[in-house]
Amino acid sequence: MLRTEMKDVELARLRLKEKGLSLVVVKDGKVIFETEAHGIKGFLEAIKLLDKELAGSSVADKNVGRAVALLCVYFQVSAMLAVIISTEGIKVLKDNNIPYQFERCVPNILNQRRNDICPSKNLLSHSQLLKSIQKTPKSPTITAMNLDLNAHNI
Image 1 (cartoon, rainbow, N blue to C red):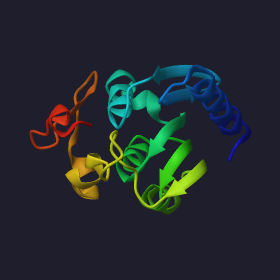
Image 2: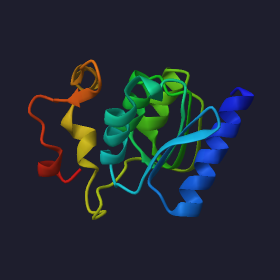
Image 3: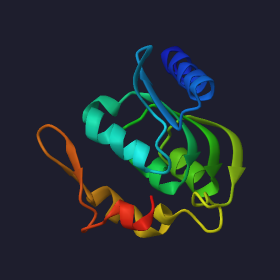
Image 4: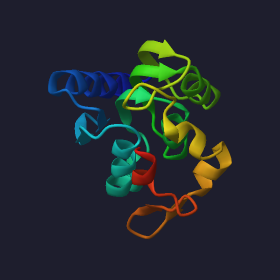
C-alpha cells in the first residue's frame, strides 16, 4: 500500500469510528463522502454522488461482503478497511489486488435483523452486478434488472 493510501485509509478508519458512521470515503487526504446508511445503500449513495471520483479512493466500511467488494473493484477503489468482512469479500479484494484491512472476518454478512444472510449477496451474480451499473454522463444509475433495493430491505 502506498503512503498516501495508508494515510487515507487511516483517516477513513478514524472518521468511521469517531463519528459512528457506516461508510467513509477518503481521497488525497480529504473526506469526500460519509454516511450512516446501513447495508449496501451507503455505497450506492457514494456511487451516485462520486461516480468516477471513487477511483483511487480509500474506503472504510462497517460491513463488507461480496457485493461491496465487487463495487470496489468496478469503481477502482485503491484500499479498503472493513470492520467486519466476509470471506467472499476478502477473496474478491485479494483476487483484484486491492489492499485491505479488517477487524473481524466472518463467513457471511448478516441482514440488519441478524437472522439471515445479507440479501445483497444473493441478488446478483458477479457479472450481473457489474452489468447492472449503467453509466450516464453525470452519474451512474443502478438498474439491476428492475431491482428495487427497498423491497429487499437493503
